[in-house]
Image 1: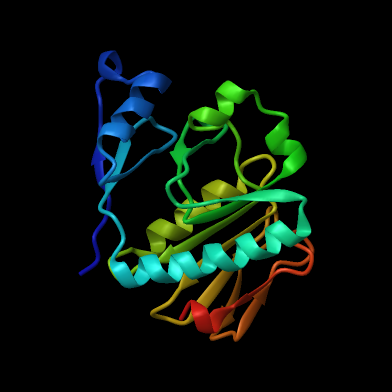
Image 2: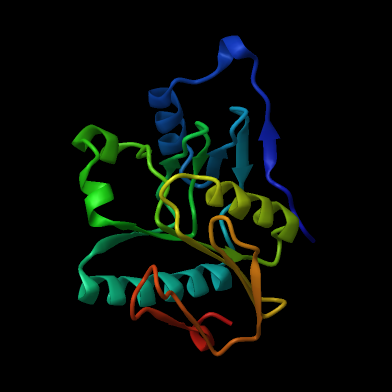
Length: 194
């Protein structure tokens, strides 16, 4: 069964401030909460255990490369970012160049940082809708600073590669996926993800 996120529309007088949204997310940790550019709340259930494991494998491979490379930092799926449209998004795995991250104030880093990662990964779970995730990836690609995005469809064994200003590329059942040139030397071993 494919589940769409629950979308809560709020009256303009009831819209939460940045601080209130952050606190709302903190007290509802069992939910994945994002907002779209219209200020609507998108509420999703946590991912299933198997998808969570595959997400962890993806994060782990990127983390190991990032530690060796030293030019950026990796974030898990529990990290929220504020996009230029005001939307709050939480990619499954993401990476930001150090100079971009270090340009933020300490206060900005402690909440939903006002930055879109250089690299984002969305890992489709069995209950996700492909079209909804493709729209999310398109939204990322419209952001300043983002250079690369991967949408991984485990069920279909496909990886959709997004680059700003370029058509989406689809790899069918790849053994690995290269992050070149954005992530020099990073190769994701798909046997740990499928």
